[in-house]
Length: 345
Image (cartoon, rainbow, N blue to C red; front, side, top):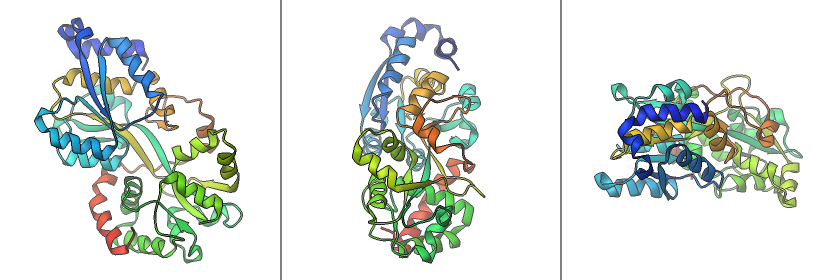
C-alpha cells in the first residue's frame, strides 16, 4: 500500500471531524523500538496526516510495567514491542484494546497476529526476524548443526553457548519447539542442551556470536538482525568475527526456521482509538514496512514488499516456520517451568 493510498484510507478511518482537526491531534506512542531509521517512519506519518507523535521510549519490561502502573490513567494510544512473548504477555495482562481492521487483516498474515475472539485482533506483527544457528567453521561442520534438535546431540558436549534461557527470544523459540515436539520431548531436549553447554548462559546474542568466533564455544543461537549488523559493519574486529563463523537457517528439511516478530497494538485505555488504528495500518503500508524492517535489518511481514538489504540478501531465501506466533506465545508458561527443571539459567 502506497503512502497516497494510506492517506486516503486514513481519512475514511478518522472521519471528517477528526481530519479537520488533524493538526491538533497527538498520538501517544509507547515504544520498545530504538532505531534511528524509525525517526523517518514517524515523521512520514505526521507529514501525511498532521498528527504529531509523542513518544515514550524504553525497554519492553519497563514499558509494560509503566502501562500496568498507569492503569486507566495511561495516556498511551499505541504500544510497540519487539517480541511475540512480550506481546502475548501484555495481551494476557489486559493492556491492549482489540480492533477490527480489514486493511491489517489483508496485509498482515494470520500467523503474525493474535485473534481476540469476536472483539477483533489484539496485536499485529510488523517485521520478522529469524532465530539462527552460528558455528565455528574450524571445528564444526554445517551438516552437524542443520536443525535446532542438533544442539542436543551428545557429540556437541562442551560446545554450545546461549544467552539466558528465560530471555524472550529463547522463550519464543522454545515455545515454537513445544508446538513441534510436544512437552516431553522438549524437556528432554532442553536438558540435553544444558548438558552440552560450554559455559553458563550469559550476555546477549552478539556476545554469543563473538564467543563462537573466539573459540569460547563452538555453536550458538542468535537473532538474524544481530548477525546482519555485524555483516554490515565496517569495523575490522566485526569483519574478523564474521570470517570465522558459519551460519545455518535451521530445519530447512522439515518445519523451517523459527521466526519471531516485532509488533504493536492499540493501548487498552487509548482516548484516540481511530488515530491509533490508522497508525497501525500505516505501519503495514509498503513504504512504512520498508522503514520498519530495514531500520533493524528485519524482514517485513507484508510479503510483497521488496528490500534492498545486502546483509539479509546474503542469507538467501529459506523455508520459514508457519506456526502462528500466538500459539508459540501460549506455550511460554509451560516452557518456563521446563527451564527450571532443566536448570537452564
